[in-house]
Length: 456
Image (cartoon, rainbow, N blue to C red):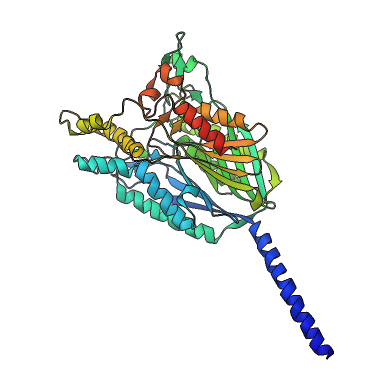
């Protein structure tokens, strides 16, 4: 009788206690945060087109790098590619394939380029337009892009299976010395007097003040107790020292990143901030000797930011992903019928038609209702903000001001289709960037509102 009673008690106890164990176990697992890192080669074959030439050598290899962040939510993928840009349908395919590999949705994947100029650009929409007008294969190598994407997706899937627990998040920052300067040097009339590109030999361009920049390089790190798992760095500048030769390079930002990664022995992913109007022109004369000098300055800042890192405990409950579609207003001079007429004009050169095709691709994108995303990943009081295009640094500075007391790290160059995204006043000041912007001055109101929503 006692034995039967004990059995009933045991069964009842298990019926009561076992669901609690399962519930508590699921709650414990739900709070576990994990991170995986992935990398793949992105260097083009010899003879294939890069941004301003044909590949004749690979001086410094290019890479795809990123992290997969796992929690009780759908995975988040943050990816950076050593290419000049990924745009339109090209970006769609990248996000779709990486999402599939990570078992998540494309809206939780953010793919950025670092914007090196001796590097490929990927845009399936522009290539489709060029093919229609007999210029296919002259600017793009779709087979190569898909091959790189296949390698990247495979790396994501493999990395996810080997994700490591994260118990702490680290943050540090340091000033970068003598790299960034504003490209738009204004005259007394408030208009652009000097366009200070990535290199400058003109004494007036070199002597002009740095102008508006964000000098801070930010370093975000994931830790499993005392072991660093992954590092992400953020800094806003065009990364060119010199280019146009066909000698492929990840340039000074990539070289500095690689040296920093080697020195600490931890995978590092670097993101280019809102550097549309920022370059090294004040401090760079364009000579080959300046590339390692600039790389050393980037590496030095990364090491200082790493040394300044402070860690705080984190778990999955501290993580929040937010996306906001942004309706970028189309530049008023971009008219589809006129652009199509230009593509048919036999008097125009292939270079002129390429310039028309990239504009037409963005018009098709907007008219077709495709909206780029502004997204953010909040982990505790650290915000990772993702912006489209070659956004001006003022957007990055504004984002920082929206979250006083928090750490805001901005990565731009996601959707490369709109090219430069200036501030309202910039469109009245003139300069090269404005002639290459596919959006209207009203973009400031739209993008600022999207940033506010992303940082709420």
